Image (cartoon, rainbow, N blue to C red; front, side, top):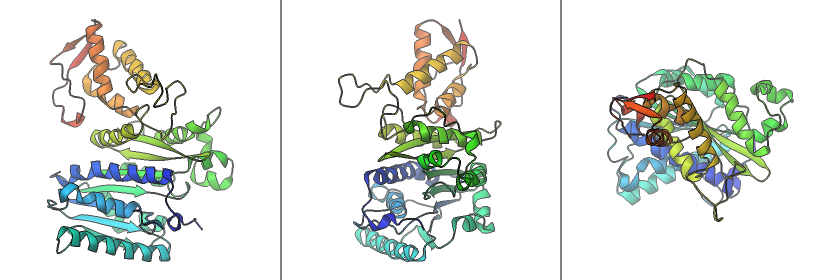
Length: 373
């Protein structure tokens, strides 16, 4: 039986994980509240727990509901379409606690804000994840391109999000997901039959990897499962807890979804945008004399590669370059910086109008071409 983390105070690693969950959802929700092509919005927390820890700190389901209000109720007061929350907890005792905690949270919210009812609808479920995920009604929700879906999968360990589940998640339209995975345990038990049942560890290169790089390596395994002809964006964030390394993996089929998740990650890690600790050896620690967030190892590595690809004429327009930065876990403004430097160096010329825009890539209608001089 999974240990009950809700019966003790959340530790700092758990608090960070929950903070990233909440901030990511806060970035995601307004996009689809105001998207005229999204007829309904669904939020799923498939491993919801009881809703709070022993000190009444909010767990993921209540964080999602809290963030859904927006500052001064700017989201819930203006929602013009159905917004539905589904919180699932397999253990019946924790499911009942979740129902009670959620009901109390909503009643308190209505009282504090003078609302007669709540525009958001929530459903508390009690299923095994695999059983619930395979239900035909749920599949129809996920497969409907008119539905926007935010999916939170805070699993224990690593056994629930296997190759088949992952491939289904990346196939659904208008679906962004975040899942938690215990990367250190995959490495530690990589030869165990139980691990191999869920994760093909033969395709993960753990050789010579430092412990702090393990989650990055596990994320690369999931990237390898994305079909070569599919444009899809995946990013990871490593979290250290004691001697172990856990992490989050985020997936989206849209550049805006990736931009928003990277914004959250780079806020929490100004050196690499991917860890709760200094993951690159040659970066300086925050607070030291040479601490620098502009020319970090990660940024310089990606900028060098972008420059190389421009000069070899493999990147010949701005949209391709902006997407390359995203795919490699950097905010797209990095590409624009490289282009501006190459223009100053008289190494390239721009055909068309130079557009400094580096966000909302999907809205860039006029691209410019890059030609090496």
